[in-house]
Length: 354
Image (cartoon, rainbow, N blue to C red):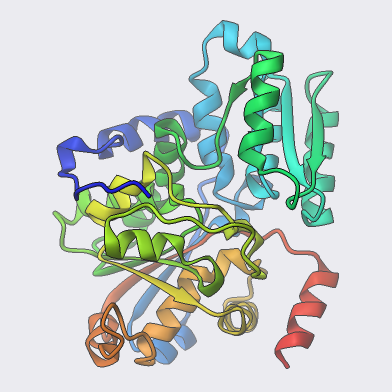
């Protein structure tokens, strides 16, 4: 495990200026997704809530922002050689679509158990893009995606576009928070899903800067994949391997060398939620906000619901009331991060939650 001290703003690999610069590039291709309100959610949660709906982004996820920004900044030589990405689905689709738009050949490593809808969409974007683009599948039990990706990139001379641990990816992903604050104004709290921490890092960079550090920034990950929370608490980089959770987009092994210091420095709290809590949040966002969102996409909302009910105890385990007060009657932003879930999968999940 790697130990790192909390960084200061000037030490961090991404600044709000980087995110603002990225927004000029990202806006060429990405949707400006809506920031939705719901009176029933305000009543349920006891605050004023803005939902930044990245489930309505191109490819159905915020991942397109980071992929397009990073690939736009490649040199001519790198574009000519092509890129490699590894992903269970949303980043794969983002890279495939960005490759199509920018004329870059893409090689994408995906696990054999990746959702079929995400696999099919990735191949669809590649088929309409540069000839020679392909998906390479692997068994999670035999090799990690990072290991296989590094081998293939070296053999083929490809540039790796990581799903989260790169300053250009982080800056691109953070542009959604920039838009949210422009729409909603000053927010007291921001809830963001966390897998490898790219979205959280980018959003925390924006929230910290535009509120002068006054916004409570909460990252939320699955119970079974609590490596970021443990890393945040201890200052040591913890990891997990193939965690069992319905949130397939958050099954990342650890925070990265870029995201770890940002999360430590700028996040106020890291918390976890159960799969059952994710299913409840999916049902609520569908029935009350009329949005279809995948399990990974409602991590932030599930965290807010849990905290508003006083069911999150914090580091000591007995601070439920403290954290409930932190969100009571506040102006709250929630990043809804992805909408790639098939009807069959929805039926299975909702049946499991009944």
